Image (tube, rainbow, N blue to C red; front, side, top):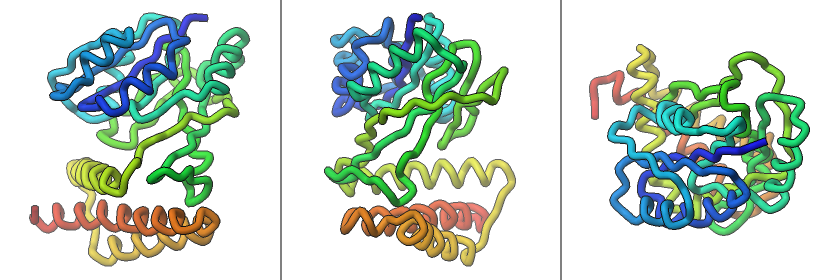
Length: 251
């Protein structure tokens, strides 16, 4: 069974090479680039990817569907540039494609935060549906937190080996993503007519910390686990606070 890998990028020169090297077993790699100003495009081409240029940005879901439209093989693996397919996962994917029992498979994801793998806090196993038959699924149109939607079946297979996620190499990287995602999430909800209150923002932050640190055993990840749980609380507060500001007519 042949496999296409699709990746959406914008200024991912720090990540794209390692990502592409981890999927060297694929039959083709499509990189849909959203107007990068760094070396992302040249590096992707150097390592064998077909680069497609996107002049507009309508959110992560739309971008991934654009990339999907350029895939030509029966099976598709969707990756973010900061993800890596481990050797064990690569072997499992190849084995599954020779005797697939499902049209869609999800993959457990293991995230690295500031140099430490996080095994709790609600970050593990963090299953994401990423491997699928090209004509059997598409991505939701969400601006952020898009999901893969099976078109003809609700039966999803499960892979066992981890997709490695290097999303937060530094605290600064987390803050940048927090700002981007909070603003995009809040704008999407506001455009859909939703509003919120300051009390909802505060309570969301409080309960996010309680859930991730106690109920999801974040304390077992030590000091970095505590940091992750605090940051998750700030993320929960931040997105609702941003929505509150929009609903109050504030920037």
